[in-house]
Length: 133
Image (cartoon, rainbow, N blue to C red; front, side):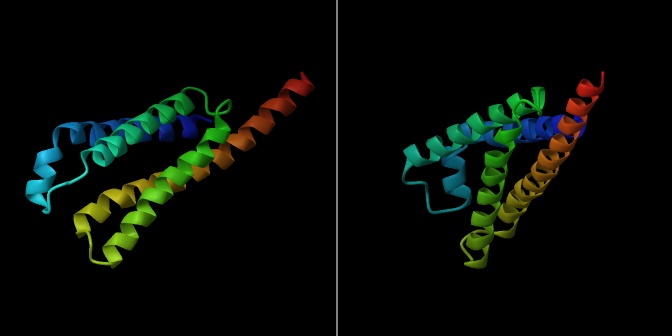
């Protein structure tokens, strides 16, 4: 269970470090990687949804056994982002550095799966120990 706590704490911190600056980079993104963003609602909506997920990771990190089932949609969030970026890269619609950030999410998705299965094992051990005592 300690593994799950560490993984989800790391995911929370990483996500907050990566996503919160996006609130202040709307115009910079358009200048550095034209064309300019034309739908600010989608942009800020994405950032807000991403930040909200970071707090889901924080909740899971606090008590992985209790919130174990939330790990599954967390895996989907990470894999969905990474796969989307991989497809965009294969279509030559994004650059390699953008894909690099998405691969961090792919790795976190794998770690979330490991945390999911390791938490299940430790939870079963805890129940058996409780029954024996």
